[in-house]
Length: 603
Ligand SMILES: Nc1nc2c(ncn2[C@@H]2O[C@H](COP(=O)(O)OP(=O)(O)OP(=O)(O)O)[C@@H](O)[C@H]2O)c(=O)[nH]1
Ligand SMILES: [Mg+2]
Image (cartoon, rainbow, N blue to C red; front, side, top):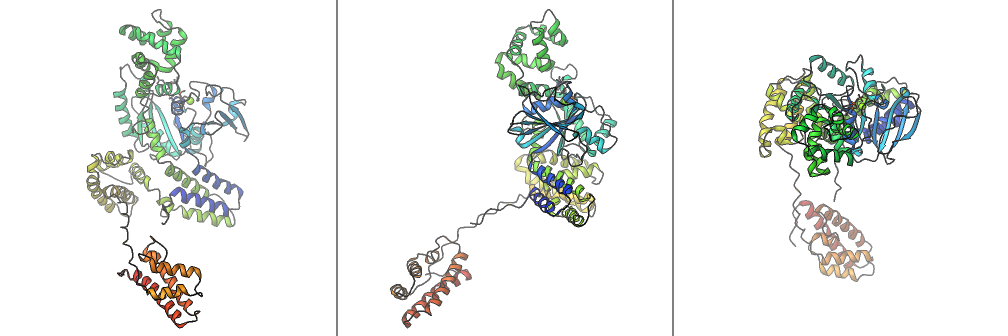
């Protein structure tokens, strides 16, 4: 059986390209840069969490990791880029300084980052924390310091803000941008946001916007209906820069995910649950009352802890679930946090799963950007030719860049944002639906059974668009989308397994000739075995000693045996023996011939 081979992915091709390029380069610095690109292709996808000061970035990181590791609220570490990555040495903290030195320390008990890192905080470039967490096997999470303004003077400043470094090669491959719950975005905020993401090499392919702290707004009992509406509106504004806008109450996800409520807090919740509903509402009106009011059943410590971990909406939610026990509280909080699950699109977890599913492609995309930059670096002698060859391999028309076909839809969304592809509203909506989901039914907005027909109808619109814009970037992007729709309309059928070939009929054999040779002392043992098989074999394959072999293989064996007995005939002394050997040779030849003709004869 031939081994199953799959076509090399863009990532495979890039690994190979990095290896050959590094091997050819003589400048050690360039070689090292190429090696770094290669190393990042093999490492988990790096996702940075960025946004304004106090927007809830660290809270979200903790929720993601299920550990209270990122310092929330003040503390100096919050001004440093902190990378959480998978590693067996759980709790190891490497503090990388600007001068190139690295010191090592450890997390405090309970997985908390120490506030004193042993070096002056202003000299720290980045902190790397190792955790033996399954979540981190697929992704590396980078918590970044808050930005007071998203205005960026230049690309370098933006990268320094988000990634703590202005080195070109050292940036995240995907971005979660946390927006503190606001009414709406004004045009300036939008322009700044787009400017920032673009300056950091982020596009709607690899950026997710999170509308955070949605429980803080107003005094609605249930903040979710408004939050969903606002997220949808924000998506309309931001869709050229992000693949989705999802609302979340990070605080509740963190509290539930890190098991922050201890016995004292659970007791406190039970006490609040005993209160008359109106009294509870009154206490929750001003959260300070919970600690200070003589009507509060809680000690100030418990009250502070509950407010810190739940805030108002969370408190109400937890108190309601309290009679069902601590597991019910945890589950209810998680559900009402909107953090979601991998399978639920429109949630933080769904967005991260979206990144994780495309990790190889996103890493390849970022590697291509890095390698293109390297290919433009100053170089001398042979290195110049090597870098030229590198640039050539990364051309849009070559298999590497063309291989990122899964990102085709996103490229089209970007082209729309840039005004390179002009679409009707219907087609624009169609395109955005394709980009936002992985499920064909959701992508086309029809029941699963109607997918091929809906896709076929859509291909007509996109084919026309591709024709009209032929020769322009927009036309290329429209053709990309057409390709995606065609895959949905005409799913490539798995190649059907070939029907089992009928056994080849046995070739006629002169039995007397065979017996004669079997009796001859001049015929070697292995040839005698072949003769026995030829005589007894029920079909052609058995006759050549290869039961079950394909027709082609049988033909090969038969031809070889035919030659073998033809030459043997010349060494035999007796004429009768020679004739017998020739007859056997003819039988094998006939078998080989019958197979090649494709008309197995009947024996
Ligand atoms: N009510 C409520 N409070 C939240 C939520 N998320 C975060 N917070 C609170 O907001 C404050 C800031 O949260 P952080 O996670 O430290 O925010 P950050 O963006 O990391 O802040 P910096 O790193 O200092 O820029 C903390 O007091 C959090 O408890 C939320 O979903 N709801
Ligand atoms: Mg923070």
